Image (cartoon, helix red, strand yellow):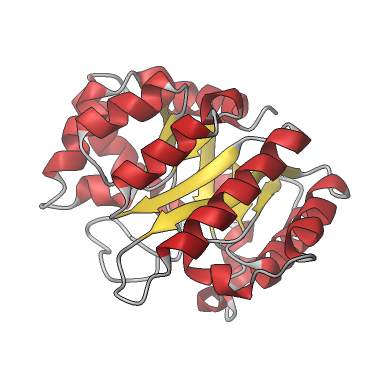
Length: 258
């Protein structure tokens, strides 16, 4: 059986409240060997820690998403994230952190501040970062360059930019997270990124419960749907599905230093 490494999901989300345990129990028999659950704020970071304690094949990332940074306080918030990371050995990254300029009421200055602060925490702890970047390519690249993010390492998850932007992140040594969007009819730009990026820099993810692949687009996503994106990626790269799973599993192990 294939070993699939799900590098980015949110099983703490209330979309799973009705059947979380039943769903997760199906993962091993469907080849899902490891899952990294990703925190998006303090509350979901704490929930992530609990999931890593409950399921032996779950790992976690703790951090505050750019859309939730208004909850961050000084002092206190960074110290709390640090405590969650240090006291739980299955926390393998700081994330998801970054910039999201998609909405009109965005506080760009505040987002940049906490992106830098959380990157500095990751550097201090020797952990990789899980980067969220939407409609903010230039600022993300500029900050990561200034902060020498290449020394930290990590993944740009749910990659949504051009192959030219991908080159900059790849040159920093970052992995590119690819999920259900690669199956979309309007996913041409992401397909070009997959074609361009070396296979040893790609990791599989879902962002569950969001961004379900075709033919489930618009419905609740889960790690069980990874094969839909994996098939498209394997086809683009000209490799077998088995080879794709093996390479991306090894990539994820290196990314999260397991």
